Length: 126
Length: 296
Image 1 (cartoon, rainbow over the protein chains, first blue to last red):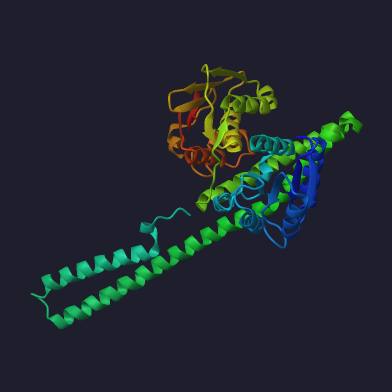
Image 2 (cartoon, each protein chain N blue to C red):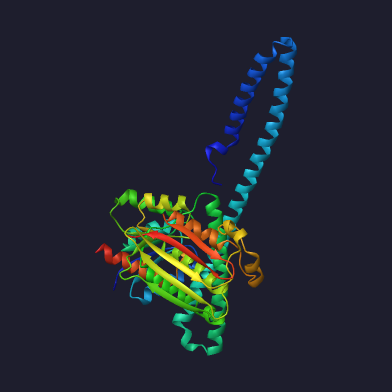
């Protein structure tokens, strides 16, 4: 996983920092954005291999980010992992319909389990 | 709320209307032999208005009740969602602290951190349970379809309950069929189900009691059984075991921490994952819970 770029779009400072720290120590290159608009700009400029995307975000929410990126780049571009705290049926169906690769309910996972999921998805992408 | 079309106030009103019209027509044709038509029409009009007023009041209060229930579920899901974000933050920060900086801490400090972490786990579990119940009530409950190595999940849950096992002086036996296949279900939620059954079997056991966990397979599904040698469930309470907030009197007197939501949630998780759950219990001899999940 050396030099793979991960972009974290998450407005909660604590969650963002801890995720970045763990991913960084596993050899990933990590970019961060704290709202939806910044996230979209970072996807264009940072060119990530995978995006971890929160749903409830300022300026543009996760669904809007996902839709905008998928509309512009087609379905086969960068994998998105939706990070939610809700895990409600409506949200998950909507996310998968918009082209999210998978979703994770944040509170259910330890950080190192999320790192494992990221590795798993990237190894399947190759 | 999982309300079908037949339970909606509008449908009930319509049914009520049909019944009244039918009865009134019958009464009209039968009684016009004896009474003048004018009196009959007035009498029927009075009866109809009376029934409609009562019907309307009943339906109105049903609607109000449904609104209150809906509000309650929404309130629970908003509150638990707001609680989840900081709880996740605490849990991830603790993980960070223990994995990256625990070298600089003395054993007392590490013990305190572990204690905080354990309390956080309890709080998160409570919030998750409430959120799950609200989801189930709102018909908005979702389970993933992961491919799971169920044997390793069972082993993980046994390991997680080790302290409780030692404290209650209980022995756990694990019997696994050869070549257990992977199952299809929600990894985290299946863990919750197993934790419920296994921790219950430990908590409500006798001293030096046994917990026997069996994992079997047939060609379509895996069946997991958790048997204890504990206090059992009284026969007159057995049909309420999977009800929301059910706690047996004996269980409540032994352990005050439970919410009575565990088995209700477990049943919903398994059924959403296209599995089944059932049990057999004899008072003072023990209980055996079984559940099945589809295999790949």
